[in-house]
Image (cartoon, rainbow, N blue to C red; front, side):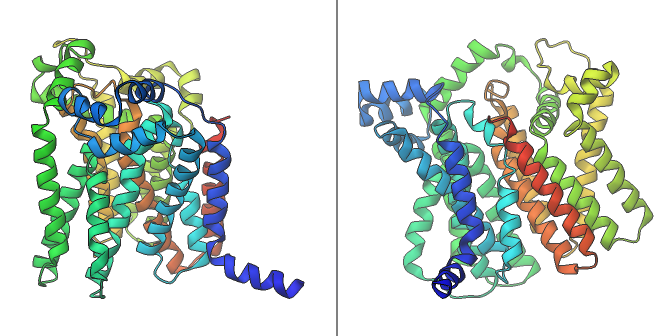
Length: 440
């Protein structure tokens, strides 16, 4: 009997972190109910029919046809079907990260991946209904990760099974229905092509070119969709009538403020990234300026995220400047809050600088960071920048978590100080707990 148990354990051990992750999220999902847009969209699907609803959506509200198609299918099923599939999607995302970055299939790193993935602020998925929001923001991220699997093989000059390509592009059709992710794919594929052509001096693989062309075509489709124009006009009139009168500078300032607001309001991904950057810098770098900068940055980010509620409740001065990030522009005449603006600029430039000095030969972390920020910053071109809420930061949050794992792996590979690694693991586990305490 013991031998059988050992054999079974040996078989499931490599998958155990992902099995635990699935069970954990499944337990959380089973307490979720229909709210917000899920109720509205579900009723419309039943009343109008699937095809009629999609045609109407294209003409009057959105270009997200494939997302709506799958979304509405779940409304025709018991909600428990979505709960199982969504928990599975979270695990697939974690497994993709493992395949992309855990080359040695290190068992501990898979546990770290599952913990880091769980630091994603899932509570934000409730903002427009859990089904509508996960299918619009989280699932496209997972599908993009799957579509990145052949990219890794391309850069390693490994053989790719050609019959999988239709599946990858099918997934990209869905993923790029999320406008922010379509822009992200455009920038990412362009970076891959430039790196291959000018850094590696190698022939560019057709799949990379295909992703770039596909993202361009999808952006054209999004731009020409009549529903997007109708929705933008309706949102401007109803929610942000001042929007069309704002200058580019006004929108740029608004973008910096709101990007910072989204980052610090769901601050665990930002805190974890800054913490790991600080540890990495202190271990790898002997430059005193860099070490001091990393520590100062960690202190500032800690105050703005993990300890912000304590400070806001006890210090009026701190409260005034942190809360300024969430204040909307309601008039063409507004005062620029210099301290909060400088704090944002310092935070962003500091993180960019530390990523660059820690990954001098690896461009992926900086591309992911800038690309993640861009997916939130481009919201300045939408009148729904305030109305959409923190869910628009989903791609940015996920990119920060992926970078965090890349940094952890870099620290782990050095193995200079076991105590540091154990401390990081404990802190990540604590963040894991804090991330879900608000769900109950």
